[in-house]
Image 1 (cartoon, rainbow, N blue to C red):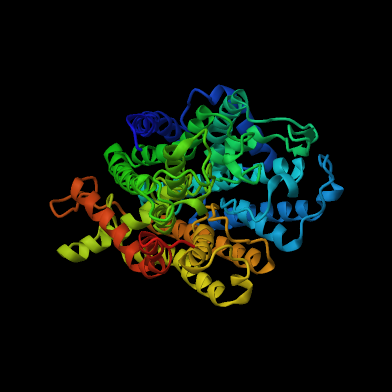
Image 2: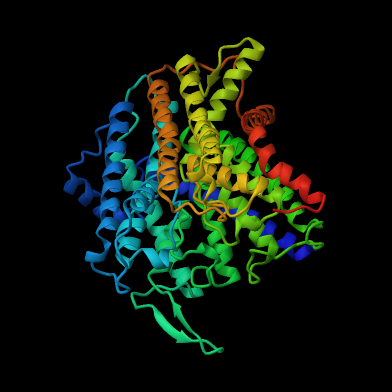
Length: 564
């Protein structure tokens, strides 16, 4: 039964997120504007040292092509290092368990996964990867991939507010400032908080203990708290342990659970306010934030209703299958909606055990582009794709030249926005279709019928959306899925990121058109409604047939007492 206590938990979470949004968002606006902030005395020397070490001239800007090339080279260099670390794991230090080398296809998948901020895991962390790989490989990529997303968003802002200039900033400066002024301080703070709650942080060997029944059990340990902090803050989501944040060593208490959920949306939410500050109109930021929060609350409400509604198959409501008793139904559902609204992908309950409608909501959140706050940076520039489409469609309806914040939206911007929308769609629909008709795809299924199809659909949706969560009933540690999902993650990341940088470069070269009586305002309630309509229509038209074959038909069959 959904109680006032459950309502209070949800309201407290949303209020905390709302209060922290302008505080952190205002701070980040000062950081990326190059203004002094309260951490400047602490990190300015480190920032300048990195510039000197790398031969970076911070005052030198880049056009969008140079910015893109720098970003791609840096990210693929990180991919290559992580790939090699896994291939030679057994010969490297900090491997007290003597774990063997990782297979080439799993190494490829994992390296792509963490480079693209997806953190899809076809392995169990405690039995596959050493402490060195977890720290020097995965945790480093958690910082870099998150900082990359923030950098692209900041570059897009500069393009929007720029005045006939090719300069959209310096990738190296944006990357470094994102890391040392935003991600690193927050990660240190949350690591301390998590360790205080009992999240393990040690280099000790795994412990072998004897249970009450007399059996032997191996207790996995490791430097988990530090990775958990950045996995949540950077909307990465990769778990140190196999069951992610459902594991008591990774998420031991209700308070650690609240902190981890808050960390998922903290930076993405604050970046919307940062956007408003940097474009010179906090009202613009709050309008977009309001759209995101409205969608979040509506979808959360549907998911909660479904989980608390009577299930004809089990003859119960508020089922606890796949959920932790220390968190309960409400916190499990709230986490599932938060982690799929952002490109986080961490879980504190098994999505495979959600009711069909709750699974539908998790899928829909990712399919919409994870623009409901979304990944750090990625959610905001993903939302701006829909803003551009909404402005263009609205202009066609009323016969006005589409404009956004004084910049004309023309054919090039619309083409790039359409490409950014279509690239993940191709991965989701085409790759799911291929896996559904090939033995290599069907042999890994854990369930039959519509639920089995949902497992496949969810896997490629998660890959294309750079989310990383899964229905978990599907065994993806096979060459077929490792390679297909890796390709999907690359398209889902760079098929959106590169077009957004192209839009930034195009807008930056345009003159700002003065506001007139014919200007369509984009900070009003009417525009917010139009934006939400475009988001839902695009999602519904694109994915409704696939969703009908999966969670929708499964829900209808569940009402007749049939399960899969």
